[in-house]
Image (tube, rainbow, N blue to C red):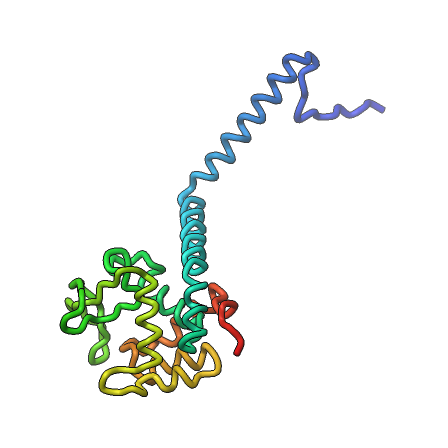
Length: 209
């Protein structure tokens, strides 16, 4: 019975130098394949998104100690202070945050240092863009302090303006309290805050009473 020939799909050179060259060519070819895969639009987009998320997480960590200090003084959940700052200022990257250290989109009153910028407002069931005057703060800490004081002390016309926020026993209740008490015109504001808190685990910064 005749023996069947065995097919050799990958035959290595017998000469050692030729074999080393062969390995080098194969390795270099594989490197080019991996490099090409890493240059695909989807891969680059994923890398960019990962870097952005790292930057956002780091910004929140930078703010967190001061948010905790303010919670001790004014009783506002650190997670709420951080989530509002992130949402209102695009994690500190908005033009208003960069130019005026204004993390919460606080409008300026007469006599306050201010900058004028376009902003979106939810009016009569739709979003509109208007020019508004915003407070210019000397630092982001000053912005966070003013925010905590506003929630604790209320407005000049209503000292109990944010009673539901102050009475809240959870960050979810505090987020809803901001909507109930008229802090924002966005009907989905509470949902957005909770999403930011839970995505970045900001509740870990809340101090237990």
